[in-house]
Image (cartoon, rainbow, N blue to C red; front, top):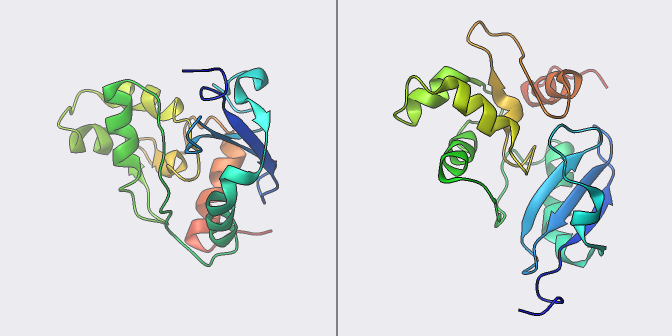
Length: 167
């Protein structure tokens, strides 16, 4: 592989939740969606050159989501993580729009009922927030708990999906 084929690309778009940095792998497939001040956000220099070209479909689908015109995403994703992390992220994508699940419910769905902490850790490492809806996971008692983008953003995203957002 040459340096050209291994390069990532990125762009930054505006959203109702602040700027979002979109990152694509060398094949132009989305591998990151990061909010400002996000926990576990990679260093900027790992995002590659700034180039909006590979992100047309991603931007279109995010705009439709934020405008309330779409509740799902249909995009190829290049999620880099352990097999367990990828299984958690796949479960996140099964949580319906406007609904929530607890960490324990996700662990149970994975067939690992005692793994709610591990599910929480994997949830926090989700590299493609919003599209892989880690904001839809709550604590066992119904409280909003950890969110890499901040609890205020999590609350606002959930309120938006439930149709109770106050902008």
